[in-house]
Image (cartoon, rainbow, N blue to C red; front, side, top):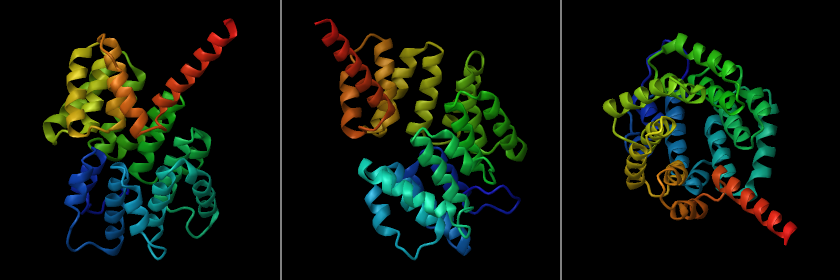
Length: 293
């Protein structure tokens, strides 16, 4: 968890790898010597969150036992929540119990996981109840995402201002600036594109960076460049949900079939928002057809 303070960050490289979507690299480079006990817990959280991002939910669930520190228990809850729709209700119930516990309820990682879970549930007011106080760069960045999803760019801009005041060059500040610029649109799209271009020049390409750049291209009408970037991302991870979802949209704009990408998305990520929207549209169409039959 990127704390907002002046102490040296021994996990700087590991954090950057995680933030930019280089999850396997983060896992491979996680053996960092001479960490304090607190930093060791944070390192483990980053590693397990990387496994979660790669879809290895059961590994996280099995490796974090009941004696682990609160931040790790929170990460385990996130893995359980994402592992199966059947686990959602019980996981959210446990999460609410922990948040109500005065001894651990204010833990930054627990509040972050609460924000992520309730954002997934599209219960944004509940998410903000636990994240709005901030305290870490991760929490402020999540607040920016939540406000963007609520179409409240004014509040997102205020959160972004807090991050910029602390560290304008922080990777999360740069990412949050790009998200905000994409949400605002217009001339800001080019600024977002330049941020992702800068990441491309500084760091190894990841699906996250390539998708960010591709979304900018699509919003600027450059669908051929977007398709090229997305196919490059697909070569890195054939099951990445955002790559598949963006390829569905991009293919429609370049006049190509999107059915294969949509089928892959349905199989590997049945809970993805695009899959749900397509299913809803298909149901509405069927009802409309039946009503006039």
